[in-house]
Length: 246
Image (tube, helix red, strand yellow):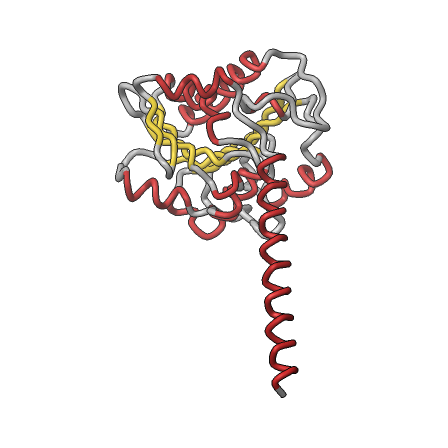
């Protein structure tokens, strides 16, 4: 019995070591495959209207017309969306970009709730998401649609289990014609999950990577627009949509 007991302890120790090695390897893999924010994006952290802590980045305009919470794309650093968020703040929106675990919005889909508790406001709250961030936002909206005015999909579509078609929810979907990352078949199929009055916009020549400032995403197509030019169009369409919903 004693020999069997020692053997069992060794087996548990070996299993523990294997699990630890898998976790460490997974963490290293995610870090190595994370898309870093470009220098021009991180430079905005020094601006007076930008604050950052371990929970989220906040960009605050002089006069707040409404609030937008932006969920990042999968494995993209939070700071990569600062230029887009800063432009949106110029339109009067206070923008929040949550610091997601491992840069994966799917791991904290309720991040907007924490922000709303910290910044109570009667003004409109909109939830936006790029790529995987959009799918994550749709999961939140399915169960909490009364907590937000609507959704903004940026090169994204709802998850298969997020049927929003019957909800009183305003939805804007923006894509780029040169986007080779977005699964177009899935994008078309999931349109049935969105309200009938969803607004769809395609940026001619825009790609997936230019929704943020994190460089060129592997597998994407080159954009016919500059990164700044594409984001100018994104901001125009978002601002126009939100203004028409007031």
